[in-house]
Image (cartoon, rainbow, N blue to C red; front, side, top):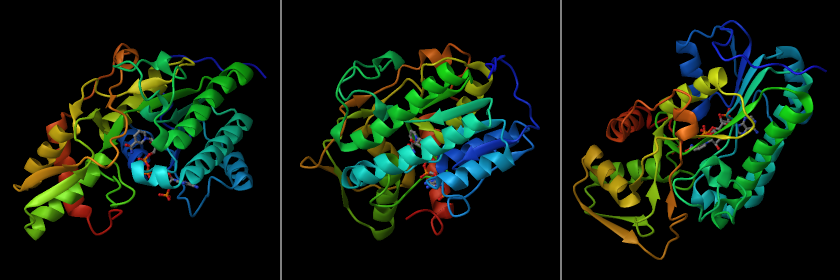
Length: 323
Ligand SMILES: NC(=O)c1ccc[n+]([C@@H]2O[C@H](COP(=O)([O-])OP(=O)(O)OC[C@H]3O[C@@H](n4cnc5c(N)ncnc54)[C@H](OP(=O)(O)O)[C@@H]3O)[C@@H](O)[C@H]2O)c1
């Protein structure tokens, strides 16, 4: 079968476009961005309508829906605790989802597919900021290595499909994300939503001391999910290469700084302490975003404004937010 050539420029707004994981934090932001960019034929299935671990069902769905474009934002996702407790599930479920979706997309000759991974694919002690080429140059952070290996396999599958089948698919690796639709559960959440919930609850109950995991010294980068969504579309329209593309702001802050910013935003005025017996995770994780910004994209939502937006969303959707 002949290769499909990539021409930079607007995608066809009326072509069938499948967003896998369209109800998740990332998928719903991508869906909103695509809608506002004028896409008219978006396709989404919840996990109860289509379990992407079910290979037969995925092959049937692709044969019927015949998407021309796909964003693969469906995954089993969690914070340090969930990843450390259920590594087999994180590895197995993510591998199944990716392999099924990409195999089905090869059969239907999907023209543009963007696979979403995460910055945890990079070595724990990678030089900072982390360039795309540092992939597979050192040991992973052990608390989420099973998840990271699944994501690395996804990047390799995209590269292998490009080589073997001539389809111009790509991969994007976002930094830590936050914003509307985030997971606020005490056991499954990432650091920023966990802090929002903790400080909001402390403010409400009048608690005067709040303790966080770790030392507070690790540095982290955060990107608002609506900024990620514009980057996802930008890459589909402008990038064609085998290397995964880092997506972030290129700026980081200590967890302590973030905790104080969250406390200030929610209006918590008590003490902030640190349980240093708990693991910190990777000491620093800042992405080099030169490949992406060099292609003409930049983030628009500053951290302070983004945190205020995430807090407002949490307050408004608390009843239905994962909690
Ligand atoms: N959150 C972050 O900070 C972050 C950072 C970097 C990268 N990412 C990446 O972004 C992607 C999405 O993350 P997210 O934060 O949006 O996660 P999320 O909010 O938990 O959403 C995950 C989505 O995947 C779907 N899903 C999970 N298992 C499925 C299955 N077996 N069959 C069908 N659908 C299934 C869920 O569908 P239902 O809702 O219908 O059940 C859900 O909509 C992941 O690849 C992740 O690595 C996230």
